[in-house]
Length: 65
Image (tube, rainbow, N blue to C red; front, side):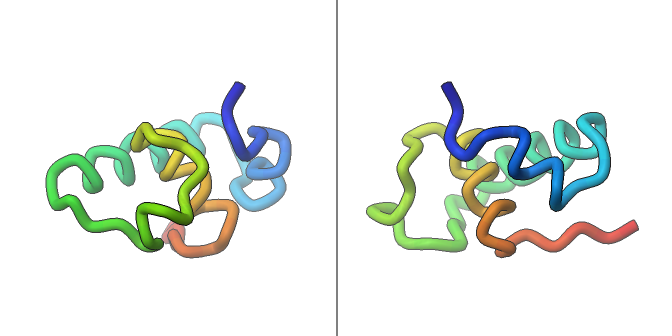
């Protein structure tokens, strides 16, 4: 099961479709640039998708319309 839960993040992002797009984009950025918003030891997840979810939950990723 992913941490944080999707239900918590849907309070931040208005739709599941947008959530999937934002997570995919941020995950690809992490893989390409190796740039993380937090220290690697602070992440609970080892995969970039989980790390992108954690960054969104903590408000480190901004979403522009």
